[in-house]
Image (cartoon, rainbow, N blue to C red; front, side):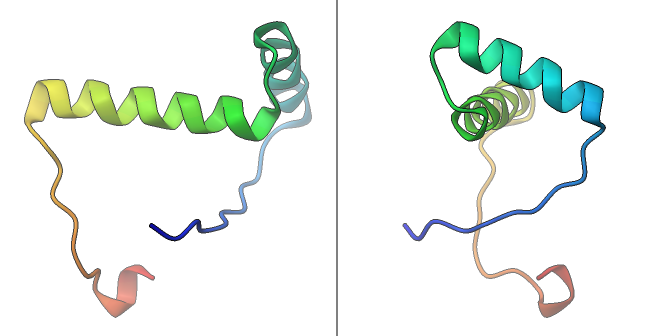
Length: 61
């Protein structure tokens, strides 16, 4: 699976707090975000079933 890059806009205070949590957990901010995303997907799939992925529409890219 290829690794993709995603750019986000985030409030400075929220980013500072993310860094505190990531440091506490011994992770980088990037790794912490990936864990949060993974947990969100797992929670969604527990409620709604597995998400199937395939080719996205060009408009979604």
